[in-house]
Amino acid sequence: MTATTLIETVLPGAVEPDGPELRTRDLPDPAEGRVVLRMDATGVSFAEQQMRRGTYHDRPPFPFVPGYDLVGTVTAVGPGADSALAGRRFAAVTRTGARASHLLVDAVDLMPVPDGVDAVAAETVLVNGNTAWQMLHRVAEVRAGGTVVVLGANGGVGSTLVQLARAAGITVTGTASERHHATVGATPVDRRDPDMYTRIRELAPDGVDAVSDHVSDHVAGPGLEQSWQLLRRGGVPVPYGSAATKDDDGNSQLPWRKLFARLAAWNSLPNGRRAQFCAFWAGRRRCRTAWQQRMAEDLAQVPRLVADGALVPRIAAAVPLRDAASALKLAESHTVAGKVVIVPGA
Image (cartoon, rainbow, N blue to C red; front, side, top):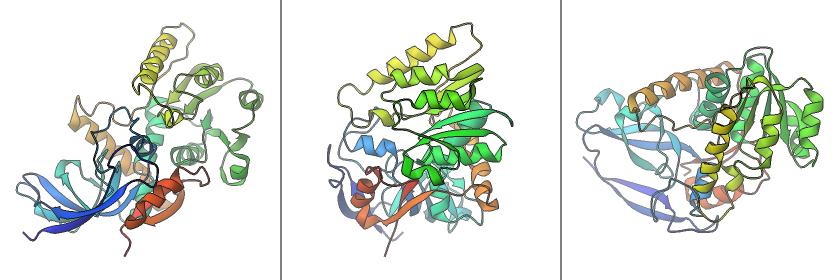
């Protein structure tokens, strides 16, 4: 098999946003059960922003290639993998390694991308869309006529969640900077308003069914407590990430221990409310097959809404792989709405 020359972005250590290095090397032939996936689109996630600072709680040792997920086309198939995969487009969640022109992926981790959805749109809703879908329909289980609050409603996950909730007949209040209010798609509240939670209570005096939250001041901090106080009986706060700790130093595990202790304490209260963290990777290590099945089911739902026009991916920018460092800087600039996507380029 002819060797594939690839271009990849490498994090050599904890660096500034413009610190990732571009390297070229030969990709080995795919081993048993693996395929070569040519990257058609990959995104910039909060996890990668934490990884480049060395603060992500579950990252490999430096140096490594970041890249949480991608949409790509199979260009070569290893022994034991179905030869019919060649030439077809798939999505894959890799956690690392996707910020490259080509990469090796286990064939069992490939998830089909519906026809009619291009690579950039599919990438934009891959992790963001699945996370939003799971929060709304698997974790919070909010029904038509309910009310939810989306903190960070102009972000990748938040903007998707707003659209999914509205498509399901759910009333949405969304927090965002004032400059994004016209496009947030929900009843807006200024996220910089010191009385933000008071404004939300005024809009929903009887309480809300769910609050999605990854932008509180700190994981398990006072903001999460205020989210809890917004809920009506049976309501659910759904923290789903650690964006609030992106620029924090110190023990990366400590905020998570505090968070899960707080959620456990709330779940022990006899007040009809419950608390649950929405973890994209939950269950993968225990049962990879069940996790893959759940991902495939949700991935089939979200891009179908894109194909039908019910969900419009919020694409902040599409940046060529050779300019991947500028993509990271843009994503961390707090000046864009939606997801920054990396594409092969020329």
